[in-house]
Length: 184
Image (tube, rainbow, N blue to C red; front, top):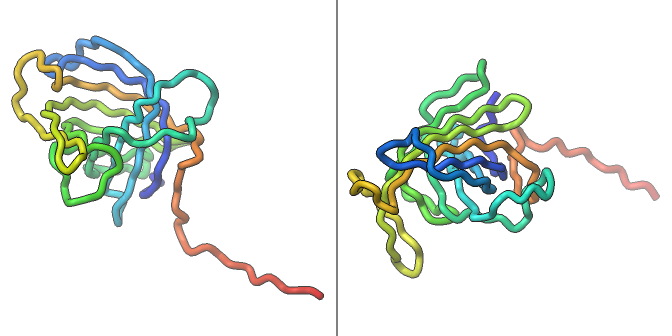
């Protein structure tokens, strides 16, 4: 059964392409991401870039990664049989939330698959303007970007979970406490 809440690090292969021609790959990179699923029914997913490139130094994510730009998605469907959860990315936050990193408006989908481990497939495109408010970076959605705009592109992301010191999976039920007997 797919986990309804977690914070994990993922190694990701990211292919970037033109907003108007998402199938035409222009560049590729490898980066660490942080994925977070939350909500009473696990209905929200954030996928954050960290700006930290993969260097092949080992199977664990670097301790110091942190969310930089965060895409947010809402649950569209879930299959316990296939152990998958499909989310739709959003261009505006669905509710006022405190988000780690700068909100990155995007449209597209993300699929989490949880068999032996957690894998992510995300196809997205975004177009936004950048600015500042109260000392924080703000990105606002532009629904119809100009051709070849520097702030409009498509991403193809494939990620898989790696061990990380910041990983968090809440327990599914109350922790069973065992009474200790003091001996003298």
